[in-house]
Image 1 (cartoon, rainbow, N blue to C red):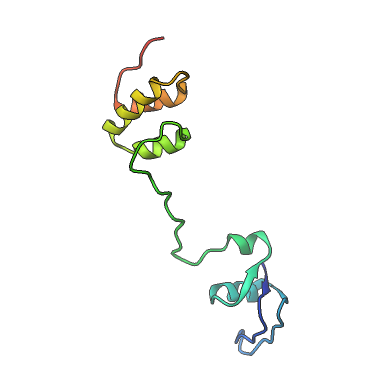
Image 2: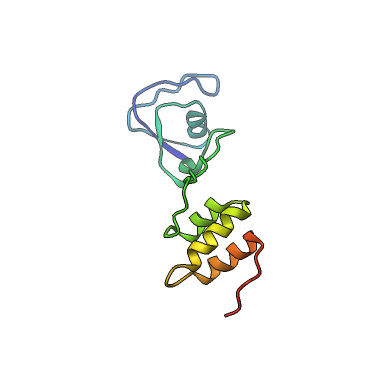
Amino acid sequence: MLVKTREAFSPYFNYGLVPLAKGEEVSGALALFLLETGSAVDPVDDDAKAWRPPGHEEPEPEIPAELDIEASAAAVLAWVGDDPERAAEALAAEQAKDKPRSTLVKQLEKAAAVEPVEE
């Protein structure tokens, strides 16, 4: 784990003060300690960039109130959720398109509990 200081400071670590200069790179247990305590440091390597405080949750993507049938299949399915009525609405809108997405249609039919249309 590697972090870089944004300012000069001296944290109390391992039973003593550790003087750090602005722009100094710090690794190992001290780097983790600085991240955990919210010190003025920036992550440098992948481990430090991936670190999150305990209990930190990634924000849930915001689901729009209205259906956007031109959105990605994942966005349409997120809008549908577990609601069969929304699934039926999205299915009708997708099937009304010039080129409906067959995989999305199948997933929406399943979510809406509708029998698939034979082609």
